[in-house]
Length: 148
Image (cartoon, rainbow, N blue to C red; front, side, top):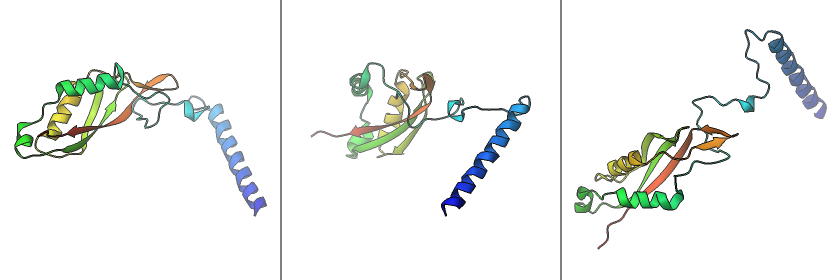
């Protein structure tokens, strides 16, 4: 069994080496990539990065921004609607926010209010991978609570 596995692996290595050699010989018509891990295209979205994006001033500044800008919708107050909304968005290479989506909402205008406040946020410090800024998704909960 080990001999068969070794033979298959050896065959795959030879096949890969032949294709690399052909690509090197014909560089004009074939894109040859020495290390595919080094390639970062412009539209890649990285879920795990070496340095994650951060809000300018840190999490305390983000919480302060949210507290100062969220307005509890009157319709939600009248209907006694409360709960947690989950918003997803992408932090772009320049720190701007795009692709804002409500993952789980509670209604009563609260979902729209959370999206409105995310759109108001200043540019973030973008996440980086191998020293280059990359697009990174971010999920944020918004808790709407009514006090008595």
